Image 1 (tube, rainbow, N blue to C red):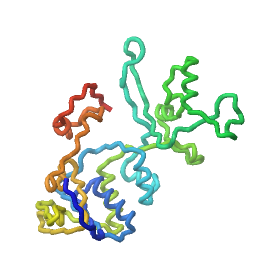
Image 2 (tube, helix red, strand yellow; image 1 turned 90 degrees about the vertical axis):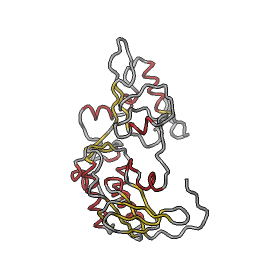
Image 3 (tube, one colour; image 1 turned 30 degrees about the vertical axis):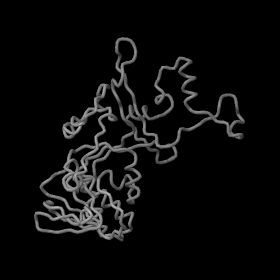
Image 4 (tube, rainbow, N blue to C red; image 1 turned 180 degrees about the vertical axis):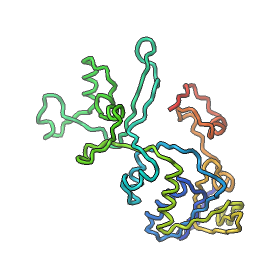
Length: 286
């Protein structure tokens, strides 16, 4: 990894190599965060299409789109998005006699666990004595309750099984945490329109050369169309190709085979197999 001990100059120009969702989301976000004070350019090749069609997100995208100034109704129809309330795991484990089918709904909870009043203590709130909600779940389980904890305590599973949205327009405080399923290609196109309207420059070209300075940092990129783009900061959004990170800087892609309890997709299968880790767990598809 390249180290640098000198002084850093102010960043006036940013070049993002690679478009798609990653590139244009980075461009739109930085443009919004920096109030348009920095010149941002996205270089994308028209010969390389986006990877995948459908994509599942996590709840942080809701905050990101809100930061860009959009409500759900502003952008969801444009990208064919639907609400995602939970992740359903089927046969994650074998429970019950005869290997009965096991289902687990993993809810999105991004806030501290709520605490509640203990039994038969009406004044506990006044003196700050509250207990974990899991104590109630444990009591019900000991009393013979067979439902899973998340089904017992949260409305998420019921909403999913009834195909209900996780939002309550009339009482927003009752809305549940959620994410989205969306068309990643359409999201990239939407973000490109947003970013370019707000001042981000788009350059269509295939990067063929990367220039380095005396300190080893990238100073400019050249495209097949003979465009030379210099900048103070370069962001690699070329995906697994790693045009800047891998090819130009030789950093490589970190391997997390020991931590990921999932089966690699065909696109990352060779990367996962290159790990020297010897995991003893069984891979499961989520």
